[in-house]
Length: 252
Length: 252
Image (cartoon, rainbow over all chains, first blue to last red):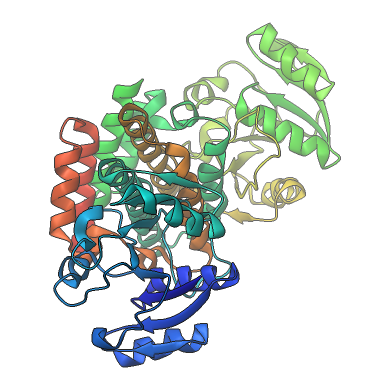
């Protein structure tokens, strides 16, 4: 397939690379900032433009890997009638690109993508389309780069996006709190990496509710008290500790 | 080394198995509940007792893998003068076993251990001793089953225990919330497993603060609003979402 990538950030870069590996031809990259367009075009060995007016208009697929805000204004800046175009956003309705093309839809990678990290992680993909006949065309592209492809409507996609925020952004915030705490207190955060990996890995073997351990689920009031004394001056940690300990205890 | 294991739970089972694999001889298992002692003795092919008075008194090392409460009362129930004994608790001072033996200390596996899960995960170990001359003896045992062994005093061990609660118990709680939300809303939680693994794995490559993504760090108020509407009836998720989103935003 001949593909134009609109965008040059993490999602554009990783999807571009994965699609090329799968045998598709990336023909052009667009970014409003010429140096960004050039960087990704260099990496993918393809053309690049920095004006929407100059976009190649005979590709098979256009992938708009843009911020949610930029997606909302794309329809007033470019029209690609008859062309298949997808966006890659978890939180944006599939209808957002209808003014660009009736043949529009979604190819949402349910993964946290960073252009500099290799190897690429596994990327589950949620697909959707405004016209039923486009759904399978989009799914075929998705399946060429992912073993986990599901159709999901706006609502289901947004729900998985919320869940992704919980397990990725919020989990990462706990890592931030723990890393800063260890650094300030002279403890070695790296000693926690095997525990972090185990916590994630075991989910494929047992449900999270069965995996819970620690002072909160045991009702170990003495340890919780010692912990709270120790973290007294860390306001963010104390708030998180108090709230989540209470919630875990109410699960018992 | 000849080792007696006092306890029969997850830590006792995994440490017993690892030590045996490393060439040590587990000579006896103690549990107050005979059927538990027997189960682990069967697994380790060794003797078992359910009365502390019957514990073999000529082993090289005693490992008290007990709850924090049980550790606090062990000194009034058994005395092993001249014998080396360690406990495996993150939150309990090294002095807790002094009445059992002056030669007491700590061998704390900084990992979430479950007896039924194979292969065993990597297990970083923190060691400490009441007498300086015992420290290296304990460290040698620890190094026979772990490539990551550090000496840590009571305070440092408790700090890493707090950090472990953040990255394991609290992270697992986020998985619980996400899994229950997906189940109740008909979304497929398994689609999130690659994201969960990637979030954990990337910590060995970039610091968590640099890895943060999502609507909170981007300041994407529209998406946050949509998320909050969507999770309106999930009180626990809403509390966590509100608190952690605010904390991530204050990091920007």
